[in-house]
Length: 299
Image 1 (cartoon, rainbow, N blue to C red):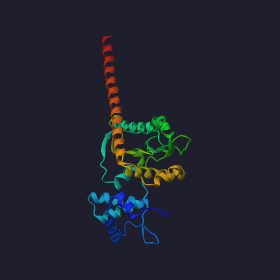
Image 2 (image 1 turned 120 degrees about the vertical axis):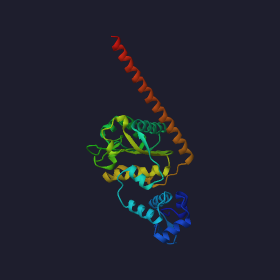
Image 3 (image 1 turned 45 degrees about the horizontal axis):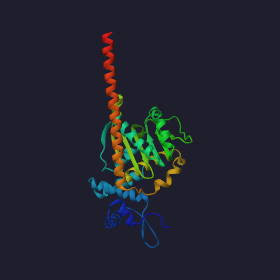
Image 4 (image 1 turned 180 degrees about the vertical axis):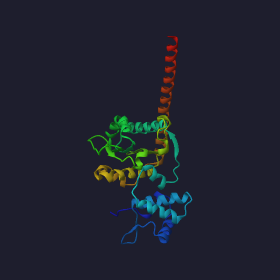
């Protein structure tokens, strides 16, 4: 069997015309596919990612030589974080600023959807601080029950890979990932990711006032990119952590756009339910406090 992908598959997965690919290769030596004895080109998954990155940056207004040089340079560098890498590689993704309560609602909606589907998961989460993960640990134990791979990042004291639970990968406080909130979830029939970056200038802000510059997506290619970034960070600490997910992450995503659109709708509905519950609790707390004050006044 021939490894890699033919040029027709690259065209289908990137939207870049065959004549354009040949022109890029002829003028700039990019991409650089392997050649079979027959002369046919064979492209790797990484070649496809680079072509997609260049196409996105061309659409964002960069010249072709600059887009190619940036893609080449970044592909040779270690990936420091999920959010930063997605912003560089996919400039077409537009971030939104969300408050922490909205981030929590969206995170819980994604987790609920994953639990409801009960599929074999590849799951990654970045929690910044160990105490934040401990608060979510019961939910993540449930998620990991059907997961092939479940890995969490935070400022843990040491690397732990307990059987039947998420592997805990320590990330130093100075690491860019420790300023991020991330959840990447791939099932057999669905995929989604959420990643947000918190500015150090916001340190000391009240918990409810914390703000995250956020990207969330159900595009299979975006989610797969996020999964591979997380896998690379984990593998740098212990390669065996991603053994169970390796074959899935190396294969091209094959989810139907229609099912992913339905997924986005389902997650949005769950998020609104969580926000509504938060608002109800908040109003209940206010009225309860008011009632207490009235009782004290009467006494």
